[in-house]
Image 1 (cartoon, rainbow, N blue to C red):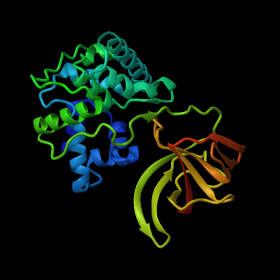
Image 2: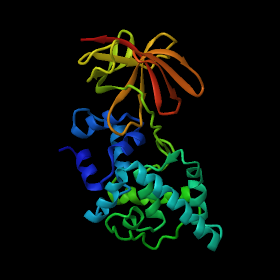
Image 3: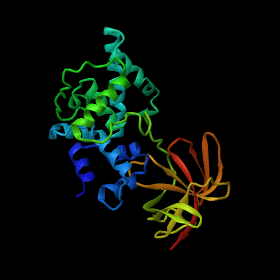
Length: 297
């Protein structure tokens, strides 16, 4: 077991949160955790900063409270609960950290985004909130912050606290709350959309440029591809008529894609011609339209 997998077990943090923090796809983090993909020096420093939000002496109860944050539904509820709680505190005591935290979380009111697990842990730490009570899971215990005076600005307090966590965990760099985006978009649940299962292979350099390989693991890509074929997608902007894979980078259940010919891509929709007819998807920041450059058996 490598040190990254050990840190996942120690902290209880989900791999999907690290993927967003590193700006990598979930399969890449799985390969990193298993030791099948080497990390660069910069990635290693970022990974250590990510894990630094959980104290090195965290109890099993605290880790259990972190583990339940894998649930998207729970994190959606917690984000709103935190926002409402900080709003109430701010109305009673006036400008201060609670007011700044409420302002920071105010976009959650739109119900289109949520906090990552690591962000919830970080907010609970700077606000001296009991994580177990916040999650409704096992009691985690209040984390003692020491006698340092807290700042009234939420981001400044997060940055100041992150430097202390960096020292506590021996991390070479501090945790960054906004890294990977301030909020995580809530995945859109599309109905009656045929998706093909994919298994990530690797990223390689070919004559056509840098491509990412996937094995098609079912028959939902027919008639374009069959189970067992390997497809290679690139970042080249596709044109109408090109074979494409529409990949949802927020997919929680695994890697899938809508595969077919691109009919059109507008500012708010993507249309793909498949064997079942034209399928339309709502365009979001986490739906990536990748051109399929070539395949092999």
